[in-house]
Image 1 (cartoon, rainbow, N blue to C red):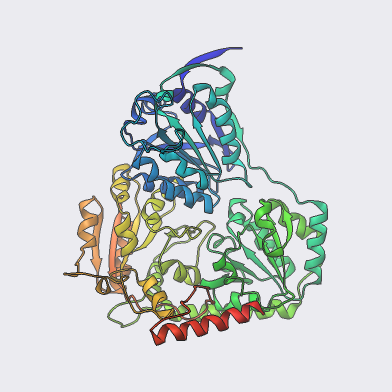
Image 2 (cartoon, helix red, strand yellow):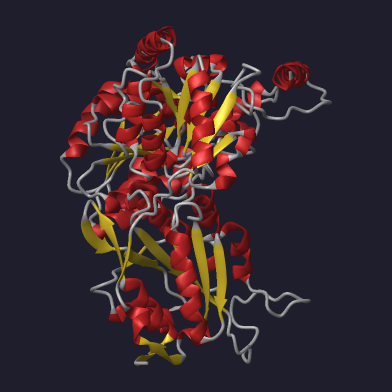
Length: 613
């Protein structure tokens, strides 16, 4: 057997560079690059190896380890899991900075290869700089934090271990059911140790998406349930987009007269102008979608985890006889809520379901009611997004301005706070992938780094990042990275001077405004943060606007800029869209000295009783 003598780090990057994928019929590198912040735990080994292959496997430098992992996650999401990136850090804080991002990828079922440096496998210099020591277990390092947030975890303590570890990593990263973050903790001495690797370990491999077809019995059972339904509803999740099944979904709904609704991850799976697209579902849903869900006697949930925001904390589907069909590549998700599982790829599953339902349509009155509900909601949304004369605009009015200045190919990206709820209800995507929301983990700080990853995935599309001042302050360093890499973003910062979303939730549960808005937090002096000056200091073209009209002008100008633009606008922390939506279970104290809390607890108990009945 022919071999090549390489260090473990050299072998790893050579194997990564050999992985290929098909995108639109074209062969592309599976790994688009490696985000790296070097330290003593990875600079000598992995750093030297990456330098040698930099023309085939680009290395990108960022400013924060969590942020560069977010960028890699957004890249994979925008690439519909067809391509991915790796991220490397040193041991210690560099590694643990990435744990939050690993959880984001885990929850959202997105491929991410994490390559943190680790302690010395030989242990002779222990304890080394930044090493965590467990008094009772000599095998533990800080990287063990990745275990619960990785689909696959391995620690490479001998160079030959890379061979089975990398093979297993690739299976997980490319499997539609198992997909999620993989952590290969690389002991820093082992990175530099040589081994005679078999040549075939570096042979090119082409990865194509697996499309499992439904089991015949499961398919037949689902068809029987659909044919018996009088008020069926489709819920489209992110799995529809990952499967590239949006055309099949649109045709399925039209052919069978079934209205459709979308989760945060699934939004843009159905064309916005589809006659049966009722829009967002659940806690942040439209009035049309949630009314259909209230009446539905069957729900076909496609590619969704059915988390509490989608199901209204399991209270949204009000018909006691309502059944759920879970069409999903992952059996764990397909069987949730005592669903009839159909374990299959969304594209393949929809095609076979539709063929088996040939000639069958939902009752015409149900389809017509859905179309009327859709029209009514669209009229409602216009009222909330229209520019007004208020001193401080609402988030919805800012969204309206961005929408009016958008083009069909644009991508709007967000992650946390009140904006995801408003965008889920109100945004009208122009094309699949035009709505990029991280709401599985709802991670503050994802937004700007995520915009960077989304733009890298598809440079031809304009990416508009919408971010609140709270998330901006948590993580903004990748503005500088976007300027450095020439990756142009348009970033709209909505400054409501604090955590307005959680302040509203605090009030809704009977609490006094406390520690959320800056004015209600302990302070000697209220900060007057100049976000435009801050963004400008990192190289962005930045300005603050005073009105919705001025915002629209700034957005139009930003489209023509070649560099990242940051536009700041003050907003009202108290106003949100009170149309649509659904109850969300947030526990309220049973005992309190506040009348408001006691009243909120009474409402909470009543809601629990309605759900449990």
